[in-house]
Each structure stands twice: as C-alpha cells, then as structure tokens.
Image 1 (cartoon, one colour):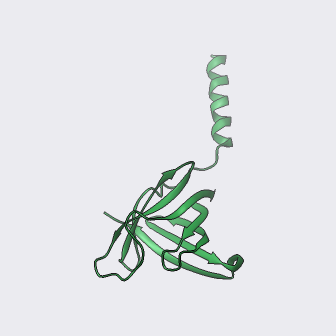
Image 2 (cartoon, helix red, strand yellow):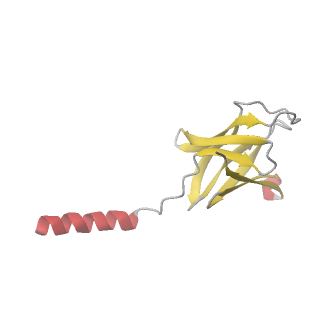
Length: 125
C-alpha cells in the first residue's frame, strides 16, 4: 500500500513538473493565399517546414522540396521560434509561429524585429 502511495505521489510530482504539451503542429498546412502548402515535421530536436505543393500558375522562385522553416523550437505553449528561408530574396530571417486551434500563424522579421510579415495557415486535407 505504501509503495503504491509513493509511486502515485512520485508520478503526480513528475506530471506537475512537466510543461504543458503543445498542440501538434505536424502535418500539411495551406497558406492563406491558397498558393502553397508546407509540411511541418520534427527534425533534429526541432520542427522544420518543407514546401510540398505550389499552386499551378503561381509566380515564385520557390521549389517543391525546399525547406522554408528550420530549427523551430518551442518557446511556450503552442509557440515556436527559429528561422525562415525566404525564396523570394534568398535570405534567412528570424521566425516565430503560433498555433491556435486549426490556425497556424507564422511571422518572419528583419532588422531585429523592426520589419515583420506574417502569414496564416490552415490544415490541409
């Protein structure tokens, strides 16, 4: 009986000390413009986003298979930070993303966060 209590108590402490689990961002997401889809998946202890589809007729230098988001690590519940590689200018920017229900918001910033752009994504079927 005491063993069960100690085991149960230890489990309770471990659960209390664990951070809240974030919603799962893994999967394919459609950009608000409908022009592209990115697949987010674990990579090397972080989350990465790879371009998996571009709408026919879309004018972009991006290529299917290109990694756009890399090193996205949790910064809190349903929030990550890492890097975004912009295929339009070939530069890499600081990036953040947050998940709220079925909506993923990504943002990339330059000049220490002075200039930022964001995009909204929804889960693709």
